[in-house]
Length: 147
Image 1 (cartoon, rainbow, N blue to C red):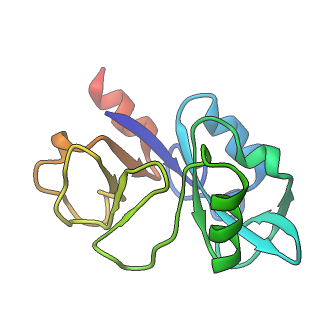
Image 2 (image 1 turned 90 degrees about the vertical axis):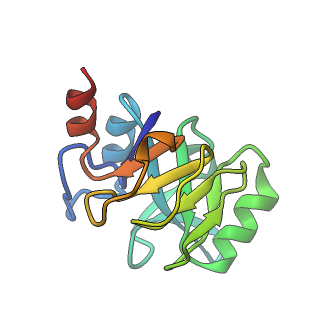
């Protein structure tokens, strides 16, 4: 099972650092990372509620990134620009399909061997062990528990 750092967090939410390129780069040294991506007026940004940190497209192509498109333009451009970029868009759907065929699964919903269990700390999943991965603000805790 893979561990995915939510917005670069490793030991819990850090709103002042989340989605910053430096924070993401640090987390990528240990884990895959979910990032919030915006495409606005021909430019790429990271940021949860709004485009905050400018990045170039090469940054988004890094192995291990799970790009959460925050606007329709970012989803379209991610899909059009590189078929190997793993991206998705969702709000509160039970599950959504990523561009690489994984099931990004809302907290507490049914899992499959291709599922990413999102934020299990918010709502417990049944049979979490069958999931392909976990996306969490606390990947260090999961890593410590498995050793």
